[in-house]
Length: 455
Ligand code: HEM
Image (tube, rainbow, N blue to C red; front, side, top):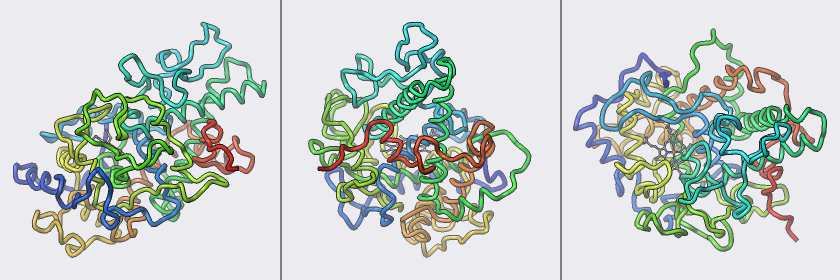
């Protein structure tokens, strides 16, 4: 079940027809959050790149992938309020990649390659030889993976694929080393994959989005007695949905698939290879070249795409989600969904959270554009967190409330997990590289997905 970080704060608004109408107005296509961007291409002034050169586009999808490791709201409804503690989380609140491993090779054997019943062959993910760039799919193109949301768009889908290959490569290394009995190799590979992923989360991703200082200071805070581990709704429904603002209007995947809009809802679902980035499709031109998303050593910086700047503007395609894996169809504006979900889960206002955290509070002047909707003093927390990123973080990274919530949840989850590297071996350093450093480019290299060396 989910829980709350600020149980003492009242909801940002009462659940009335008027509040709902104002939220729908705020998140509507063509509204405050979508001034004129369309699926064909972003006007540069409205939808600029993140000014921090390190915040490359790949980190947006790492964020989405992390979210799918931590939270899956299976029960709350948009049309009525629910207590957070009654909402079931379909994911464990642990950085353990249950979205990748499912319940493991015994219970979810369909995710793994057949070992012919030989227990001495360590479990590897099933890679489809007919499409060695894609997750495995059934005859209706449904992805055979542990979380359908990881096939919501082609980039997160191939992110999942990269993690499958990473696991397989780590198994191969351990087999070649011949140090462990074969029946111990899967567990060891899984631990190495998880720890290297946790390292990336803590040392590469979190400092980029929240800032080094807060991560460092939260790691020093004394942990209280071990309470129930849970994901707070202030994180899953507001702060960590900041990533929706990082999504660009369009991405280039490879030379045959350039400047492709994220979604064009008007393209029929049956189209086997639409000119958009929806998931659930398999065609060779949809193959992601990762050096367009992450900076590799010796890579060509001119190919790199940045994340979009973090602000209260969402890219046009997110106001008209097509039906597809992980996309429910009753509201097609992601902004409206996020805002209504915040009301349904009785989230406090951004200002209320800022005061409790004793961090700078946005003034009504910073929120002039939502004054007519009555949200300049009691602001829906998701909108507030995006606006403070703009005002306090230049749109590069999260502002004080967002950074605090995300960094606190991440560091607490890692510190309270008895199996994380932080708990088991606090001084552990990555072992899959020789210099003790590890980032997404290393993971993709080990997965065999690095770009070929430039001639
Ligand atoms: C193209 C990219 C993305 C699409 C289309 C997308 C779409 C969605 C949709 C449809 C939902 C359910 C909304 C609701 O009904 O309340 C959702 C939830 C969520 N998204 Fe995204 N998302 C994207 C990227 C991201 C990124 C980059 C992040 C974070 C860095 C993120 C974080 C979340 C979180 C935390 C939830 C709540 C999950 C839960 O608890 O069930 N998303 N997203």
